[in-house]
Image 1 (cartoon, rainbow, N blue to C red):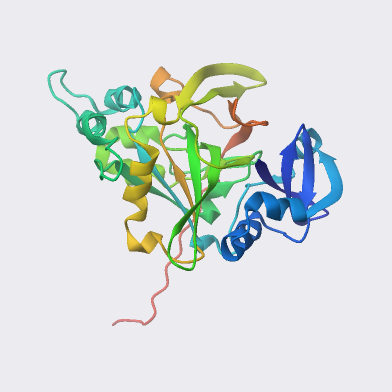
Image 2: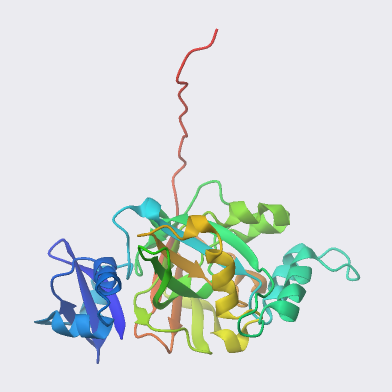
Length: 329
C-alpha cells in the first residue's frame, strides 16, 4: 500500500494510491497521525485505512502535475523529525568515494578501509551485532523539500548533486520502541566538491536540503530495489544511470544499519519521526557531471508509481546576525 500527502483547498490530505487513483483517507490530516493511531490503538494499519476510506477519489497524475504533493510524512514540530543516513553501504559505493580521496595507488583510503569493514562484518548472523557503518546527520524536518519542489543549494556551497537512495521511515512509540513504517525513494543531496577537499568535511557536505517520496510503501524494504537517476537540463536529459539498492546489492544488512542508528538513546524518544538514507553506489558527480542552477533531478523506481523530481536553485546570500546577551567592556 502506497501512502501520500498532498494539498487540496490549502489543507493537507492523506491518501493511498491504487490503480493510478488517490483514495482520500478521512479523519486524518497528516499521515503521521494515521500511523500514530495505528501504533497506539494496536489496530492493523490496513484495517484503519479501510475503515476511514472516504468516497472521494482523485487522479494521481493531476495531483502530481499540479505540484500539490507534500513529503509523504511530516511532523508538526520539525525539530522532532530526524534526517540521517549511512554511507559506503553498497557494493561498488567505495569506487565513487575512493576517486574523491585517492592519493597514491598503493595507499588504501579511509573510504576503502570503511568499505572493507562493511564487506567483512556488515551482514552478521541473526542475533549478532555487525560492523558500524559510516553515519551522518542531514538535519531535521526543515531540510525536507517536497517531491516536486525546488532543492536549494546554499550560496556558500561548492557543489550540489543528487544521490538516489532508499529511505527507511520510522516512528518511536511511548515504550521507546522503534516502529518501522515503510520505505520510500530519496534524493540525499550533497556537496561532493566540499567533501573531496578533505574527508573530514563530510559532515559539512551533508547538511543540505534533501527530498523523498512521493510515496511511502508500507512494509519492509525488499531485497532488491531498482531505479533510474536522471539530470535534465533545458528539457534534455544530460545524464542518466540505473541504480540498485536493497540488501542484495549492499555490504550491510538493513537490520545492522538500523541497529547502529537506534542504539543511541537520543534517537528513541517517544513521538519522534526518523527518515534514514541507506546509501548509494550511483552518482553523476563520479561521471564528471556538475549540476547547474535550473537542472532537474529525477529519480524513479519500479517500486513506486511517480518519480521524485526536484529542480536545483542557488539560494541568495544570507547574512548571519549575532547578538550578545550582555555588553562587555
